Length: 278
Image 1 (cartoon, rainbow, N blue to C red):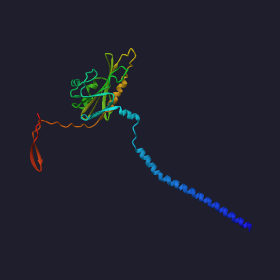
Image 2 (cartoon, helix red, strand yellow):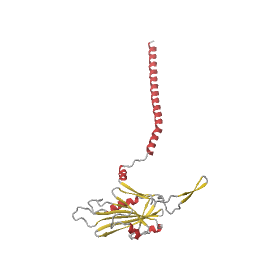
Image 3 (cartoon, helix red, strand yellow):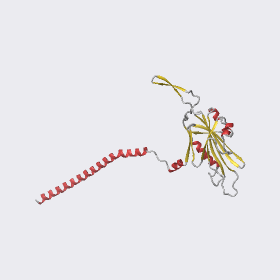
């Protein structure tokens, strides 16, 4: 009797252990299933978030933003050109007001290149490079619509330097350029001329940098780095953008006939054009 009771106790204990094991396996299985389901559900959302993040345009760096903020833009809709230059430099449109040995004036162009027009002049301030021997820095834009592409490429401004001609491509337009280095009255002068043809127009950039050749005997001024200054002006040429020219609105022409024939409702009505005021 005692042996039978002991047998029943052992059977009950083994059964309880088996049920506990099954419950643990079932719990672990349910947890694994939930984790897989959660992972599967989060996968597409995660990929979508990554794709959306990748699609966002990259923000400009602080260096790029600072560079953009330090530039000004010259824009000429009539001639279809614009360029960027340092905000610290000055800009004059049309003929220059001052008479300078280093600058071309409209009257100079009239004798050297009939039909050429001085469009704009960028000037580096005299104190642009303090405590150096810097004297002058400028960029002038000249346009000429009277000649052919061949005339443009053979521009006397480029040929005058009699050096090897090189090329630089700006927005798909090939510019031929040449330069020279000279000395006048103790001043070292670097000059460059760039010419490119587009929209039946010859675009010419004239770059000049000048500095005193002799060192400062007192040592207060350092020799100006003319090559570095010329590179800065060259960046202005490289920044040029070209676009279709805009046509300026036509002005009233006094020679137009004083009468117009207008058709309204199938009938012709003669209307007088107001004569211009004297």
